[in-house]
Image (cartoon, rainbow, N blue to C red; front, side, top):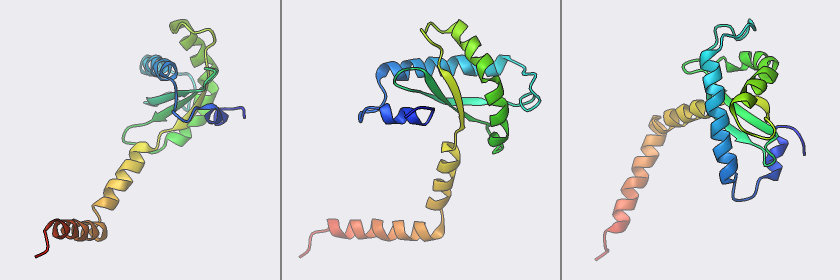
Length: 148
């Protein structure tokens, strides 16, 4: 399988290698620095504050999936076309700062983990779930007591 999603097929069952993790973190750091210091001419990115949350590299280091977020905002999907347009420039800038044989091709994805965590938190705080958790907790305590 090729393409950004296809690299997952090449992962070992143990997950990414230490080198993939280390290089991915370096790529994340460099991209975050570029986003912080660069004013883009692209109208979609002109006033955008983008946070690079994670970078996952393919086993051959030719593709990098860059997870991005906008803290406090949920309109990250609107930035994806602009990010795709500036990806070749970002790749060139990244290649100047990193010592890699080949700079990975960048593929941007919205990071939805914070939204998912907030959704789970709201579910856990809902009255129905609280009631079920309290009932389960009380049932666990009564099982611990020895029967006479």
